[in-house]
Image (tube, rainbow, N blue to C red; front, side, top):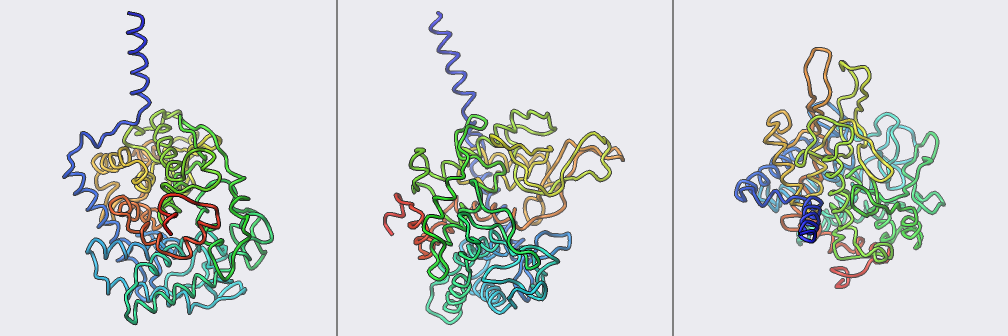
Length: 458
């Protein structure tokens, strides 16, 4: 009897620790229809909101905003999804991509404080939508340029036909990528700077610890024109934080976008560098564990926020309600901020972003897809509109007028991109397979010490 009870306890613990596969109980046809509609609606954001002259994507909509060069990078890849899904023709996509790349090639560049779009091959984090010039005094951004280049390289690999438009796209892609002086951005140090201001030089912060910067080091190593030192990848991985967070042992980083952005473009499943080989995982598995940990944190809900549950979760960088007109002066809420939960990082004010689950679909579809379905079903038009999911929701906040709960009115380009691209990667690996053909990506991965899986065949 004692043995029987012991076995029951063990079975209970195993089942309670395992993420529930809610998709087993969902209607597959309904789920497919939902994901297809989500893809189409999210694609429409990038297709309809790009500037008609420059091709630049807005940082957000409908709130009037500047352009985010990272969102433009996601937009470039989104057009390829549109062709693959039949939303637009190949010719329509090629014309839009050509216009965008021409803009960045011909945009004014240099060390001036204004009247320019970039310098040393990098571009400013935010630029004006129409003329594309530096917005206020933002930094020349390494990571945002990297995400722009990722979109450019995906287009270079996709448009492989022998016609004038597609040849021009490939040539423009080469020109833009080879112009980026990745080694200049190292600033003579072991790890790459996060950015540069013409007024005061390089930022003090550099890319250390595991995060979205994987792309930067891979591109920098793979560049034939301005390569970074061969030991840069090892120098970066030395700054990782390995530990257990909410039951998952992995390389820690709090907000989920850091486990997603580089993975939108590079398929890390089955390939390993020296670091992950030593840990017995790959970076794909690492992102899976981070996603499960993020959900487990929400289920535990240590701060007691309203609305957190097994299928309503997701901490990442997103909008928030801020503190204007809140009823309780003792509660503190953030605006746009990098929310997340990890071993030594918890930033949580009760705000959930659908892009957290959406950007992790390939890693853990059994928990991410039910989360997206549930959020749409529970909150309807408050959270889902013409362009798919609005950016965020906070059900805890109460306002002075007595209303409870906050729903964002905006869609953010850098949060729309992961949903659309990862939906397509999950379905057919489109963007991953394109980047597997790109010589700069392959060279960078190999110089970083990656081997195994698909990379061994290159």
